Image 1 (cartoon, rainbow, N blue to C red):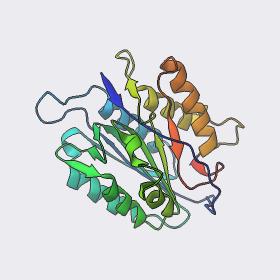
Image 2 (image 1 turned 60 degrees about the vertical axis):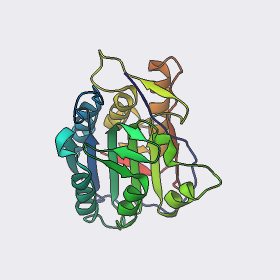
Image 3 (image 1 turned 120 degrees about the vertical axis):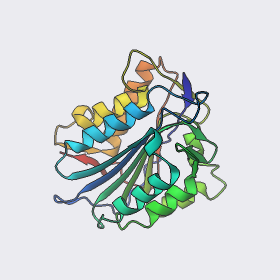
Image 4 (image 1 turned 90 degrees about the vertical axis):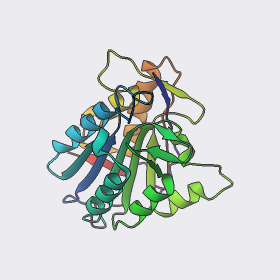
Length: 240
């Protein structure tokens, strides 16, 4: 099963700060079982559960998991609002999604969630550190064309996007793996694999390098994760 995924890395320095007592708020969503059978996928629910499990082991993180029939559009947006509303300025908020995507939206269990709706929810959070990890078809379209306002809109709210492949690529899953290539490398990186200098703090640059290299290797250089947004390459993504 193939599905499209994306990310581009534009690292711009900003004033983001992570303090020792900062908390991370994660909403992880994965939809494998869509209504009917024609749209079903194999690994997205596992992907979301894996990422939520990683964060559940971090004492400074609060995580929510929504999969399959529980991941309706209203439920996802509701959890994003209530969970991210808890964050203070120096905290981190993260939305992880794995499942089908379309041009301009992620596909929840029952309806599409437009990128603009997700951006609006994240913009309302007080947190200065905002991230989207996406393992979904056409997720690269979140960036849009450089000549339109899509990228500017995300940059305005300091949202880092880490997406699974370039906009013109498909991503190949291996059925002997628990997770897709991107999520598999992402979870290993977040658990410490990306911590190149062993300071127990994983930065955006460290995570991108680790995940990008891992996915290229697994896919025989056919899939290339990309990261972009307005943030410092030293921005903290995970602190253990």
